[in-house]
Each structure stands twice: as structure tokens, then as C-alpha cells.
Image (tube, rainbow, N blue to C red; front, side, top):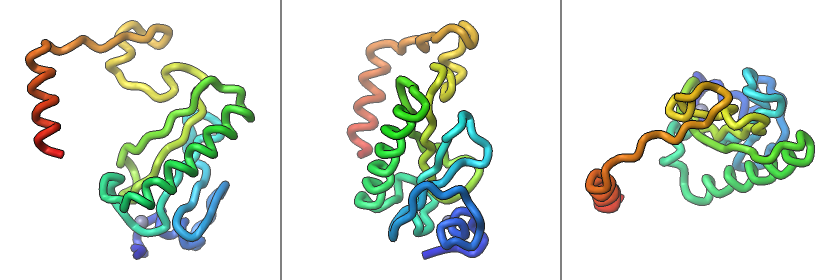
Length: 143
Ligand SMILES: [Zn+2]
């Protein structure tokens, strides 16, 4: 299942060049062309899926396992204390997990954590307990 117009389907098929670091029958991992840090990698399914939540569980596990291997390698290679993995669904509409070696606490961040500037790490404000209970109930009922 591929789409000719999809950049990542074409990379997965080998029709476009990429700096591949892992390839097997289900997934491909390659370097992000616009890295947050050197080594910033993407892990994608070879089949076209737009959203990570739509990945079959076995395929999602393969992507996560690959990202774990890359993360362990990044810790050795770059001597970083942590590696981040996340899906955003931005830029290319083909599910892709980012794997980023974190040299700084704000290498992968939110404006909510930056209220004290880039040298601080702000805890976003807490919500009232009753609001938290409502949110938790809504999510429990929805899953
Ligand atoms: Zn695709």
C-alpha cells in the first residue's frame, strides 16, 4: 500500500534517496533532512498510513523497537542523557516517528515549558482537581 505522491512512500520504495540507517520488510529509518540535532532520525512504516494511531499494533511496535535501538546507539555515540521519540503528524502525511538525541532539555519542547526562557524549565500550571477528574473521565469513556 503506497501512494506515488507521498514523499515517504517513495523513500520507503527506494525511489528517492535518503540517508538510510535501517531498512527491513516493514519499516525504514533514515536521517531527517532538517535535523534538530545531528543524528535526528525518522522511522516510518513502508506501508502508507497517515496517522500513528491508525498503525496496526504490530507495526507500531516494530517502529518503537527500532527507535529504541537507535536511541541506545545515540546515547553511546553522542553521550547524551536522553533521546526523545515522538510523532507530530506535521510536514509529511505519512506516519513518522522522530528520534532525537537530546543535548539540551529544550531540544524537543513546548512553549508551555519555556515561560522562564530557554535556560529554565517551567512546569505548566496545574488544572483544578475537578477539571482533571472530568478530563480523565472523558478520556476513560472515550477509549
Ligand atoms: Zn506514504
